[in-house]
Length: 337
Image (cartoon, rainbow, N blue to C red; front, side, top):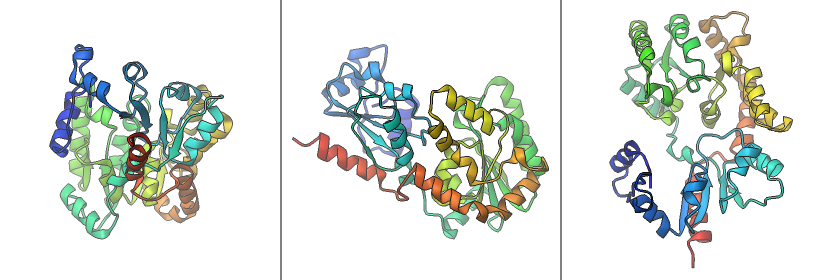
């Protein structure tokens, strides 16, 4: 069941065997989505939707999209109406146990469901996708994946990254979907300029969500990010990292934001642990992307243990079976008579 026509179109194209019910706010209880929820035995969702779910008697379960670094006291307060939470891993459990404040949540740690769509990272798959993108299969590939507009570093870094990076590398630049799919009028000319610069550089792609994030992460030999969810997801492939550390994506700014959400110091440190997984551009001696990328490749082994420890802390299990575990728990615990 969904409320967006674009989402409905996507799933009907990708998964035609599934049944769909559209929820329309204006029709409320007369909407087919509302009626479907009223008849459901179990409702699984990725957001709190407390007022939307309240009228329905079905068992309610929450799964998490993204890596959900900040399971804050307020976030948990908004989840009290769920019968069961499917936590990603160790970090989320630690936060839940610290902030549950007397409310005993029912939960299981199942792993990260999106990993089921992560392709195998091998030379055959890499060459195939690089060729599809029109990139040189003999070169290492650098992927730049910033955070959303207002938080991320796209406007600070994109142009300079194209200018600075050596032609010894492929470059994939992927603005956040909320930005690339909803360009504001003053951003359109800037994006056209970047696309022209990318064409002139060669072996450069500005990916406006034409390819899935797992595919892009799979071919990355180095990920440049704002210490965001993609940087944590890339740990699945043990990908070397370089963090921008600029603007609202600096260590100090992210730290202040987490403190402002009432996270305890232990949890703030837990989230910021990702910064230990690679060098930070803002702290490099030379503010030149070419040198920073070269240095990140040279030092990648120095951060190997930290990358593995961070993955274990966030996700726990390096497999693709989280969705199956969730389905089995729902079937055996909530749908059996």
